[in-house]
Length: 544
Image 1 (cartoon, one colour):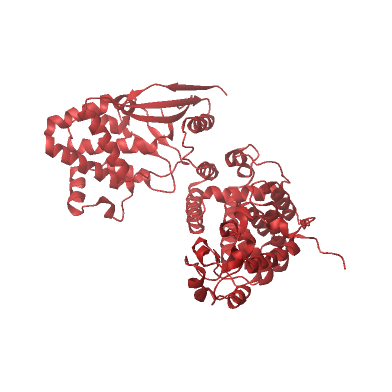
Image 2: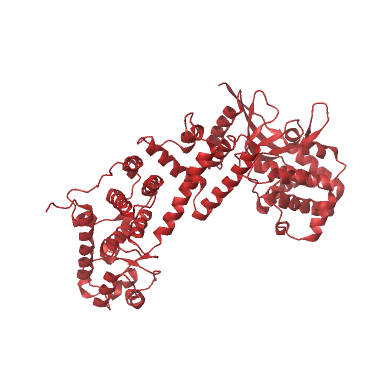
């Protein structure tokens, strides 16, 4: 499709006094500026005014279709646009007879009839537009009542950021006016309209969706800090638009807010949730190729968001959230299953977890014995590969297998020796946890990791450490401990009495045998013992 780009610097008067209404698309995030951002914007403009220099506020990115060019969609810049609009609203209340302030707050039909508020927020999970419309109608009495009632605008339980920042700007300009008077306020207003500049980058195409896609690509290109807009915001809008009537839209808003709350409770983003979903879909489609971006995956012509109904997609997402919640609960149990779930979580990236959730999506937790066997195979594969994103290629295959009820490879390794575990790297505590659970399978509800000897113990070491540098052995498997309580940063003899109460039977016996110190020989003996447990786990069992 044909696409044009136009970028022409404008002052705030030219930007806000046109007939265009700025549309905040439904996929955008809510208005979220706090007092700090508002204060900085105000201070920067006042500083430029005092120094009699122009001020550039930055760029905004707009998408317009050729047939609706007068109403641009704001792809980037809504926070600044709304904040500037709130500044003008506050000024219009303090200076109610200034006509131009009426013009910047609203837009009129071609004949001057019927005004509408200058900004129309379509963000549906919050009431930004309701608050914008309400504060647009406020008079000085409304502002003064709130100014008298409370000192901090945020204290009002019904206010969102729009009300709070509107009051905040009113307070700033109220003080400005009280200090400098009408004439200075008018001079400042003129400066703000004529000498504060912004750069609208306008992308137009025959279709608004195409224009928005291109505008988002431009945003990604020029924003060296990366996208602020999450992929899930785009997916949210696509799902919302699948609703056929107001009842379906209202129900989706409730469902989406519930999804956001569940993700928050799980400490994951909605993008993370869609990442899990993408792997489940890839598995069903036998896709073991390299991943593409989430946005490309879910917005392609034949994506699940296109094929499935809104209800089915939301149901899938909630099912994944239920599985993640159950996963976290079962991970903290005093069971053998919890041991292997903890080992999955201890790995240094999320690929093993993707495979587990894909299995659970199709099978649930019903067959615990089968689940534990799958977990062992995933651990065996990922841990022997080491800490690397390269595990993803094997994980793709595992996800495909569990999605179609196919047997998962055992991933036994050839020629595994104790020397295979001389360097453990970033997985050192994962290997220590694995060795512990191979000996004592029932999980700790809570566990922590520690080194038995640290650099604090160097001067207390027994004589057989001569010729050996403790710093080179701090991460030996024999020096790593799994505890059922928090670690203590003290030398060995000082933390021994506390650690001796552990339910880690092997460690407890070790403490009994070594109440004062650990010799080099004994540390190496414990390392070899632990490594032999690992060798047995990773090696193919010999035929009897």
